[in-house]
Image (tube, rainbow, N blue to C red):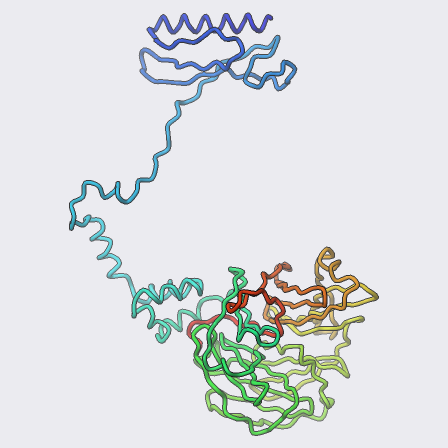
Length: 463
């Protein structure tokens, strides 16, 4: 009751102050209400809102703060008057009062400034736009659409650091002619490449924004830029090898303007190199004697390219064979494979050679990542898939296919009861699940991706 009496006394004093300064605001005598009054300073003519500040956090009286507790005192605290935030006016309100046909002088000045904007700086900005944004900008005018054929724009694109690669994939049973996955937007794209529509092709290699395809029916090679549909069918090979081949691709310089080369090699040691500058296949030499034949190539393992050298996985004996596209030299490295390794493939990140594969022991299966120790020629485990994800594989016969091995890996993990797509960032060691690929025709999810390859999207790469 002591606190109640103090509250009533305080309200009375406030009313006396209001009457003294001629205030017309009335405050009722309610003991259990929040005290809030409008205080008027006679000399400064400034307005402030005041409310009691209580320091008691207990709820013994059953009332919500800020209600005075029994036996507690309060202090007055001032707060600046509330000023509503300015609201954004609509375009109609902003243009109200303007005469039709008149233009603001600031707008005219802005148009003059942009008219004098340097062309090279403009191309440098456009070259750094996201791929999807650039293709929307192409629709603005013919000048922007013609940037793809500009040499200066190609030079600006070559100066832009490469971001995460995209993935060009083929679905099971060739249901979709091709699907591209953009990991930055986590979005699937379905390009239409008329030249490949009637062919059964597999993406087998890539370099500089170009993807190399192999026609499994006629054994022909094609090179294409999936973004711009720049397409080229390579001349027939001089050696007719009908067995499966491993394929690698490199650039002659920093971009496709200097040309590119493609290597195919068979198990019996036959191989050829295509040079885009000469537009022909050549046999630089024969396989050296120190390379054991047959190669027993792992065709599920994609080749990796580092500084103009192609690296291929082999077995019996386990290891790697490499081919230097500049000198034409073959090398062989005997490297013991990790125990209990099943499906596996090579990968690369920043010049490092990596290995990704399935470790299967008893009923447990896990995806592991190794890095090659070049001095000791041994594989060192550096990471593995989170255990909570691996539990889903327990007791299942899981198969793995690598759909891209350039810094960012895409893995297809499937069994009779499961079908998963995941990506792994070698640098950040981050595992992410990939949304299912929806085929445009029919709209049915078909996440079973049969094969694929990673490529760095480039707007100016020409086949």
